[in-house]
Length: 212
Image (cartoon, rainbow, N blue to C red; front, side, top):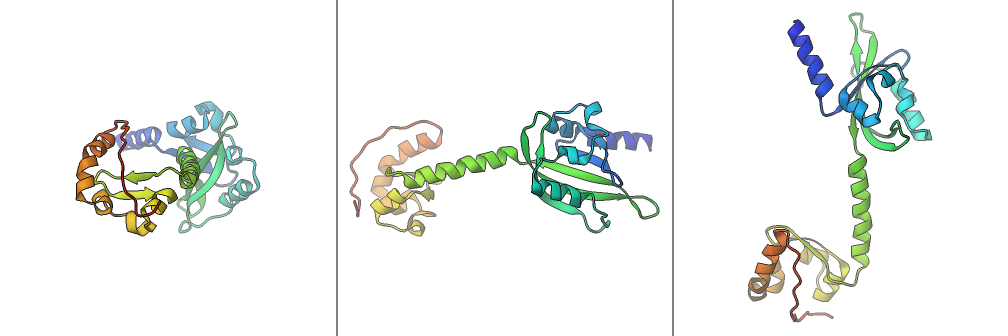
């Protein structure tokens, strides 16, 4: 039994996801694992006995979510994947997803709340950058397209559509050979293969477009 308990503690402490346990009555942090402390920038001594509210960003929605998490909860009503801003020790905001499940004692009382915290910050920043890039690409007068390794179009901008005289659905999901024909595809295939392998290719040639 002791070996099993030690194994569970090791799994908890070394899990790659942030785990946090708080007192159900007053919201004090009782336990945290290494991933949680690294996420928030606190030492073991600094994080324990802090209040759960201390981790939430000072914003109306976050305050509301934090209060909701401290409301009485039933064992069959966990909180799942609630996206909120939390705060790093240094003041930096973290975009996270939190799931909360109760720990029930022998009498059926909720004595602890167990939180699983996923850090979404990098993904949200990447999505923001991608949206900005998409707007730039859409406004560009250059022909821009995104191909997968099978030479299938996954995205094109407006200039690409206009100069080919095609709709989005007539290009995206189709191959380069479908659009240009076998002869031109075989002419440019070598350059496409080198590009898909990671090489930057500069290539010039004359092409007749149906619409210019």
